[in-house]
Image 1 (spheres, one colour):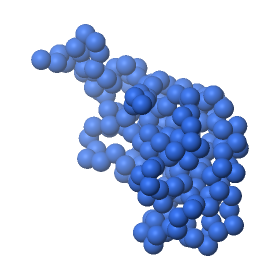
Image 2 (cartoon, one colour; image 1 turned 90 degrees about the vertical axis):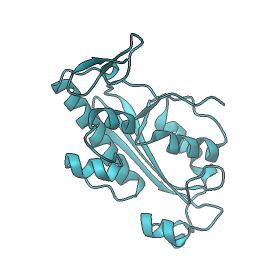
Image 3 (cartoon, helix red, strand yellow; image 1 turned 180 degrees about the horizontal axis):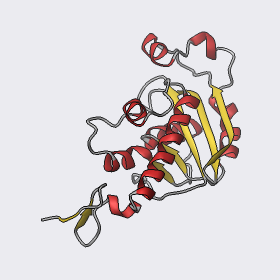
Length: 201
């Protein structure tokens, strides 16, 4: 299956999504938490947060990272039991996330389907808009832009991602930058975040 390309737009209506998982592989690992925010006209209008009971145990490293224990998920619904609620929440919205393909791949694997929603990645925007940063992890951007601190919990990370995207929009509007200005165009031009245009040799 071809890799899904993320769209690059400034939107006011979208759904922020984040997952916590038992590991990094959607083939070998599972979701243990899903968090989502429905955004309309740039404002949060609805929230969703759900722990998920995985078939495999949560190892100490993941518990230390997320604070989610095996005991916390013991009596939670499994992924099949939350599927309909999640699909209903996201509807046809663009799915926004930081490194969104990670969450997207886990959703597809967990639900055993390919979600038709368009994707948008704040990581891609951040790398172009804040090239001065050595790293563009959500924690790094949260500190740099003085956003709400993320906690490696799904809904908390959604809040940070939402604030990050809205800050990106404000920064681009203030600098009069369009999304296409941040990427190389078909004419061989490249526009960087300070609006300086240089030819690509």
